[in-house]
Image (tube, rainbow, N blue to C red; front, top):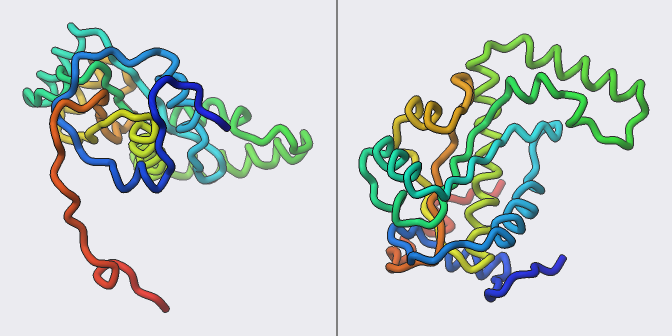
Length: 207
């Protein structure tokens, strides 16, 4: 599907090869049409049983970004970027809306069976265990998000250094939710480090 944006878009390979972590951004707002297009792509990320536990919080308000920066121990990329995404996972919300995750092509009997099976699996877990399971799925969406941002001509940096409790309080995120990352993004105004990665024989084993 063609992307209707005003900036040059990249192929998947180009986006992967060009993506770097950027910590200084231009004071240039991101059009809402671009953000909408970003999430139209990212929502296609796969998840086990199609449960889609990810929840995105997009922050553009300058005053709120200042508070987010304080919760992120003063890291300046939070306020430098025109927009910040906080990516969270909420498995309790998923469980309360299980029927919404079932494919509409199933019969009613199949849908009821699937809901019952999933309820049994996840209700046998603790809230913490469900939260960790959902977080692993949400990290798949994080990878999609980083590549999609670059593919649309923007740059980002995934952050894990922040006070989760403070971020949840600021954004009204439920206490049981897990935050996968905070992602400032925009047009880069600095260079990232060149890629330094292991050779394939260090990370790939053929059997």
